[in-house]
Image (cartoon, rainbow, N blue to C red; front, side, top):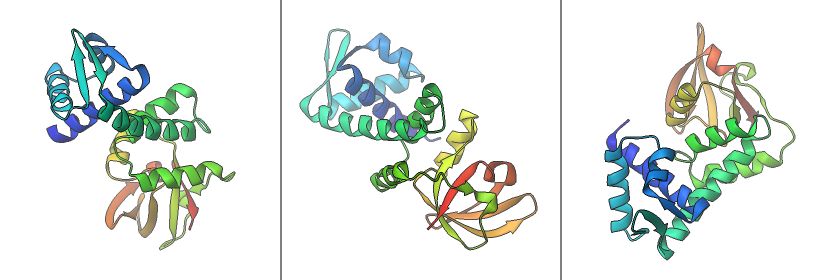
Length: 195
């Protein structure tokens, strides 16, 4: 992952934490955002330069401008967390939402809100037919590292997916005009609804 991507995630994490807690100590941020002090320091400087946060001694709080941006990040997180609570315990739902909040667009959030109203949770992607388009409803990968890799490729609930080819022990999928080869062990953990 590029430094700019890490920095973006750290800034969003800081804003979400401030949206939840309003005023946070620097030590608390260092505990909650698990990256090097270099990234935390750089993120705080950029947020302060953009007038999204201000410091009071050892504490950090949002400005009026920062309040709006942080609320948007928190809303996205909460939509994702509620969605995952349908199939996961609260802690796992929180972890998955925490990963996804950095990658999904507003369009995907709208799709997830729609998915949240469906009773049906989809079928495994392995049962989908070749050249069929669907909407990803769930990814049941418990390994957080693997889940984050899948999400970073653009494969997440609320996103459209199409099977374009089958190969031994895997399938070729298309998401946003990008093609990926996925192992069948991963594919069976992805649930989809036909569009």
